Image (spheres, rainbow, N blue to C red):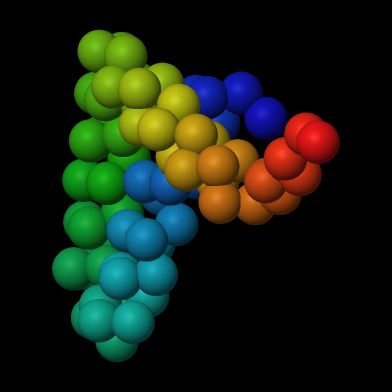
Length: 73
């Protein structure tokens, strides 16, 4: 997984879940929210911030999931 894809997922999934939980019954507001989210993620992609966020997310994931090596004797 590239850092840009990880950044899109790290930003997009929480925003989508927030919109679905709180705004799903208000149709017009929900679609406006999704449009604003896409616009914001597009801006962050063009400035390179999504790759930075993805790099940090991947570093956190791999540092937590990687087993610690056994000490050498």
